[in-house]
Image 1: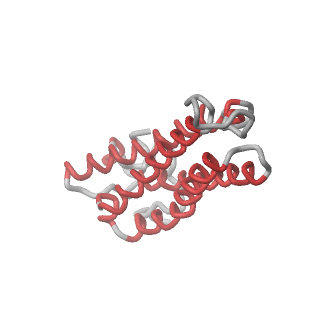
Image 2: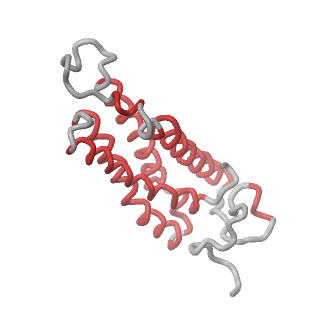
Length: 173
């Protein structure tokens, strides 16, 4: 993941809008609002703002090293901390937080919802961390991410096997 282009990794975050499913499950009476609202709104926010971040990455070469891009990635990680905390509190694992017989976040442990904590969340955490590691490497090196498809910049920033991405620049044809 550390060798992928940060624009490609950032573009993956648009899938976070799937967090809206938590709000639908809340509306259907399957998940408690104490979990569904923070988890759903956080995912929707990151997912809807991902195209705007992508646009800034494409238009401004220094954006990748800037505070806004770092803050957006940290916000994406904090969303998972908030959602995880809310899920734990709403699970009944902490005595006295959830009234007996009330809704809990227990459905998150049942198929297909277990894919969120078991696969989707860890995947997006790795994506955010990969981007942050690359940003810090950029700041240390004092350079912008490469947009060329030659072998020279591949070691850190050029996409691997993604030469036809629509947002990639610096190519002929």
